[in-house]
Structure formats: C-alpha cells, structure tokens
Image (cartoon, rainbow, N blue to C red; front, side):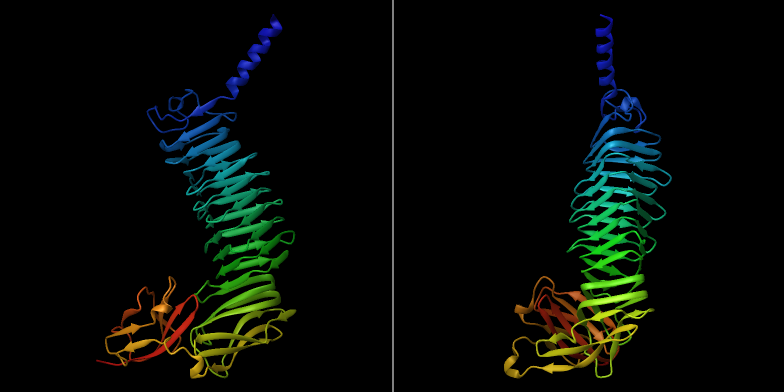
Length: 446
C-alpha cells in the first residue's frame, strides 16, 4: 500500500512539473511574474508549456527558466526587460523585443520566427548548442546597435522572403552556421563574425555589407548569391565565391573592401560605370584570385584612352581570367566594346570602341522623341509603348556623368521639368529589362 501511494504521488508530481500555462491577462498588470495573469494561477517555470495568444503587450521583468516551450501567437508582444530562457522550443508568430540590458537564451531547442513576425534584440541573444533559428517569409531577426547575439554551435536559417539585420554584433562560433536563402544586411555599425563555422549565401540570396564581416582561418564562407555594399569583408579562411560581387549595389556606385583573401571562382563582377572617376571598385588588402565574367552598366559611352580600375590589390593578383572583351549595348543601334586588362595589382576595363548597326538592322520605331529640344522649361518625352514594362526608368545625366534625374515611368509619354537644370547638354536614357534607348537633350536659358 505504501508503494502504491508513493507511485501515485510521483505521477501527480510529474503532472505538476509539466504544467501548461496560458496567458489570460486577468491580473492587475501585464507582468509575466504575476500569477493572476496565467490560467494555472502560477508563474511558468522551466518545465512549462507556455501559450501567449494575442493578449497585447506582456512584460517579463525578471526570470530564469521561463518555459520548456513558449508559443506567441499573432497580436501579442513579449517585451523582455530581464531574462528569458526557454529549454526546448520558442515559436514566435508576433513580436519579441529584448530590451537593452536584457537577455534571451535558448540552450536546448529551436527558435522559430514565423511569417511576418519579428525578433528584435537590443540586449543579448544567446543560442548555444544545436538550436536552429528559422525565419519565415516577411519575418525579421534584428540585432540593434549596441546589441549582440551569440551563436555558439547553432544553425541559423534565413528562408526566402525573410531578413537578418545586424546593426550590432553577431558572433557565430564553435561550428555555428548561417544559411541565407534571402537577405542578410550588416549595417554601418554592424559586425558579423564567423569563428570555425560556415556562412552560406545561396543562389538568389543577397548579403549587403555596410559594416564588417569576418571569417577566421577555421571558418568557411560560401557565396552563390550576391554580395553588395561599401563595407569590409575580412576573410582568412576558405572563401568559395561562385556568385556575384556588386560594390554599392545595383545601380549604385560604391567601393567594397576585402582583407586577406578575395576569390572569384567562375563568379561575376557586377560593375556600374558613370565615368573614369566614378565607378564601382573592389579594394583588396591581400591576395586576389579572379576568374569569371563581368556585367557592366555603362551610363556614358566614354572614349579612347578611358579605363576603369575595377579591382586593385596590395599583393600580386595570382589568377586573372576573364573574357578578352565585354560588350555593352547602350542603345539598339550602338554597342560599346570594353577590353579587359589584367595587371600585376589591378584588373581594369578599357574603352575599346563602338559598334554601329546599319539602318537596316535598326528598328526605326525604337526611338525616343523629345519635344521641344532644345528645351527651356519642360519637354515631353515619348517612347514606343512596346518598350514599356514594370521596370522602365528614365534617367538624365550631365556630361560629367552626374545623375540629375531618375524615375520610374508607366506611360509612353512623360513630362520632364528642366527648370532647375543648368544650361548645357544632357544624356537621356530610358531603360527596361530588355535594353536601353538614349537621346541627347539641350537645355537653354529662357
């Protein structure tokens, strides 16, 4: 009889320790630590299954083992002022905010940030062990300025449509991995460090570096997507780069910096060129290995004698293998030839001439009409309706290469106001997904 009594007591205790807690908000405040805010009339502990279901803002001022599993449903917001610890699983379908000085730790389970949800870290995010952070479509994991995240052996997965924003410090160590299938942004004050793990930018994904990314001698950095920005990438370990490098970003002139290793393994250099002094560039303080192709957006044709240093390296470039010539169609009748030049410490593009099509080869309908031209105030720009698509843009450049007007257009006829422009010659460029049309505009005084 005594043994049976002890067994029943043991089962009852197990039930007590595995208790579920659902937020009711029936207390006099919105504090996690108030038992009256929970249906069980007790505060969750490390064995609890916690459900927060759209009850507005909940403040966790203090805490230790706050739950084995925590589920936050849409409409709710959990604000952590002290510490939040989950032992197994956190499912966030709404918002978690870790305030400055607060800590969120998940030592043994999985953190899932669901579609349209946010995890904003202003304090410390600690994810040791084999945890996986999965961010769903339109969701965001943000490490704010002065905040930090420690990925100690975990795997971070950024799914398509999601975003990881690092404005503070994100340390990935002890074999921790980051697998990006969408967007990772490192702000100007941000640092993403890889110590012994692997960072992978998948095909179609993007890494924007305005701050700094480091990968030590035991780490691996694989790029199959696109690297953009004006920041620093310090890579001393393995660097597999079959993707694209676009300094500044698409349509933005910029300079990106690589320390120690820069590799391009059958990848693409994406380069925007305005003129000889304003163009994308890659600066390498170390050794460069270059092999692949070049994609150019050339905003002004240039002339003989013009060259553009795209890559400069402090050490000799050990491999430089590109097509001998790059062709850029500035409009349907004209194609610019750019020659590739490999020097000991630089890779350059040089103006190599222009190819003109015969009139019979040129579709006379594909022209821009500008009236009046010369213009004193406003001109009407007319383009063929067949040239319009969702990405059609109008750009106007001064002869110096300065971009003075840029806007999307959705109509074959658009007015161009020139009243604020100085007198002179300008290059009008209409661009869509299939090519470019250009025309000169002369601005005169009234």
